[in-house]
Image (cartoon, rainbow, N blue to C red; front, side):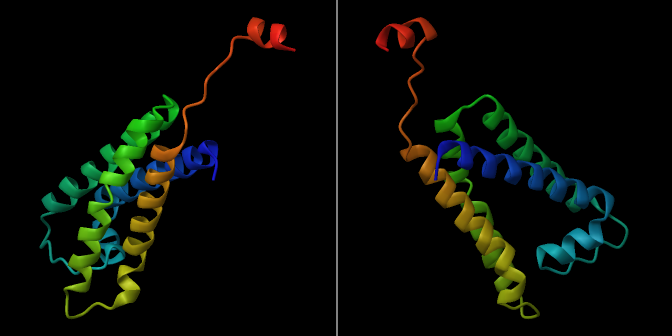
Length: 138
């Protein structure tokens, strides 16, 4: 996998996180069900707003790191952030009313974050040769 592909995947993850976070604001019941848990808010959506803003922040940060081409910082963030979908998966699977099916999105997120994070960290930095030097090397 090339660094460009890893950047593209990370950017799409970031956009996905922004979408998921926004859904906790605009459609909290749907977002909670899609997450894989039941939550009776009784009209108080404070938890959903807390969860939503954290997802939006994470998504914006991922996109910003991609746009700034901060390969190592992006790799560290993705790899370390793997703790989030792992924790979410454990939470979902700990409920008596859920099955592995509800945990699949969290499992996929864990795999993507860890693999892309490791690939970005393992990639060698690209050395940019100025155009004048390239011409003289030819």
